[in-house]
Image (tube, rainbow, N blue to C red):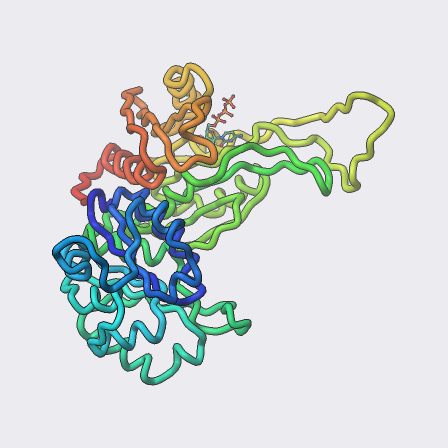
Length: 403
Ligand code: CTP
């Protein structure tokens, strides 16, 4: 993770500018320092206050400001380790490729001699314009990293190539450049489950839980970034650059896991699986009666983790359980690892408001089968995911010399 690295984010005037607010949050959660520079047009799409609050830094957009003795474009260029321009419009791409420096962003670009990440976003015809393509090729030939746009629905109402690349892709590209991410999981298949299962009562009601699926997503993102063939089995709607299997109930999750199990190297069971489901699903909406009470009969769901651990025949796959507790955290976690037979258990305290469900941070304990406990201090879920994957990888017999 790019702890303490300086990322300069350049935003130009396209509708995708609003997405960069989330990208800034991702960079900040990874531990990087973020500064933002905007073209004047970018500020038609996002506000200075939003960018300032998210980056926790002053946002630059004026070419000449009375301030430090050092010209602003030079000090920004000196400070940053990488310059990420997203969205990059046809105009800004073409200016940079031709050495034009007519606003603060393009002036910094002209003075910047470290790695660039350029994520274009524009209308399909603009994207296909031969001059724009020629200018992009000029940048690529000089070593600028281009994160190409995707095909999809565009703000102009058409569908085609030109939509800003997925933020995960821009983020991963930046982290790779800053950290030289070692792909120590290449050749490994990793399955991650995420989110709370949903058990239907009738067509309009269900039983579920507060799990946001964020930890699972962070684990799968990390596994993918580290080179693993990644499968995320989740109850949430997410788009990822790796395989995602959308499921709803515990039974569906069990089926999806069984289908992926045989060639898996690691399974991270971070989903919050409902222990019970409705005995008989009512195909019609359950009607209110005169009675003041309603009794729902529940039946036990399979314990998927235990089922997988029983299925495991050799040292493969390594299976990691997760447990969310409100009291006696370590004791309960130790009991669970022994009862379920998994190789590791990751425990966290969900009674705390500052970590766990629906928050961006967590603090966890990783326990192995010898019942050794390792505490991972409170930090972003993304960094926690890195720690969990690294610990499990190292302690399951691999020497991990990754950055
Ligand atoms: N789990 C599972 N199937 C279930 C319940 C839980 O696979 N039916 C998995 C979870 O994905 C998690 C681990 O078991 O990795 C522990 O989940 P938790 O809900 O803490 O455990 P339970 O056995 O349900 O215990 P509790 O009585 O605390 O709910």
